[in-house]
Each structure stands twice: as C-alpha cells, then as structure tokens.
Amino acid sequence: MSPPRSTSGINDGILQRWKREDSLKRGSLGLRGVALFFSLTSFLLMASNNHGNWQHFDMFQEYRYLLAVALVSSLYTGGQVYRQIHELSSGNNLFRPTTAALIDFLGDQVMAYLLISSASTSIPVTDRMREHGDTLFTDSSAATITMAFFAFLFLALSSIISGYKLSAQT
Image (cartoon, rainbow, N blue to C red; front, side, top):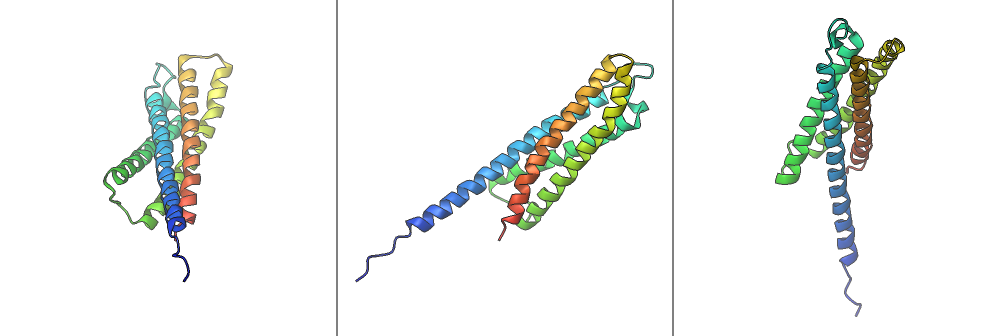
C-alpha cells in the first residue's frame, strides 16, 4: 500500500499565486493613485497659472496641450482608481478580466505617452522665458511640467504591471 498523496504543495502554490495577484492589484492601485495625485496637481497648477499681461497659460499652445493632457490623465486614472477600489472592496468586476487587462495596458501606455509628450513640448517654451528672468509664471509652469513628469513615471510603472497581468492571463 502506498502512502496517501499530499496536496499541501498544490495548495501552497495556489495560495502563493493568489497572494502575488493580490499584491499586483494593490501595487497597481497604489501607482495609479499616485499618478492621479500628480495629474490632478498638474492640471490645477496649470489652470491657475494666470499672472496678468502675457503671463497667462492660454497664450501658449504648449501649455494648453499640457492642461488638456493633465485633465484627460486625471479622468482616466480617477476612473481606474474607482474601478479598482470597487473590485477590491466588493469582489465584483465591472469588466471581464481579459477586457479589463487590455484596457489597463492600453490606457496606461497611451496616458504615459501623452504625459511625457506634453511635458517635453512645454519645456522649451519655459526655458526660453526663463532666459529673460524667473517669474512666478515660469515657476508655476516648471512645477506643472514636473508634476506631469511624475504622473508619467507612475503610469509607466503601472503599465509594466498591467503588461505583466495581460501576458500572464490564461
């Protein structure tokens, strides 16, 4: 008679996989939460960057582009944070897992690209204005660009996680 087979190894593997998936969900939520903070901060800083005369963000198309991207990024990351909090708290998915993984990956990639694109187009105009002296307007513009860059950084990290989750699907 052979000894009974142990299933603890199988159970341990399943538990480790569940813990890893839970860690990925929480990590993705944390990264998107920070990206939401930086996107929203970037939007608010640029929207309030009005200091009279020519020092108005609306006079520069680069700054209007940065404002629009920061708004879209805030809406996207806000929606993603809401969806993930809903899924973690209730256990119900708003989308099928394959659809959610695809939306996560593509959305994170597109938003990260738009954020770095808008920040990089705003840098030269800010540098040109700073050659003639630092003002509150240029300081606010530089802070807005920095916030957009940090939002890009956290969404890029989130896209790595969402890419892993997309590729690890069965």
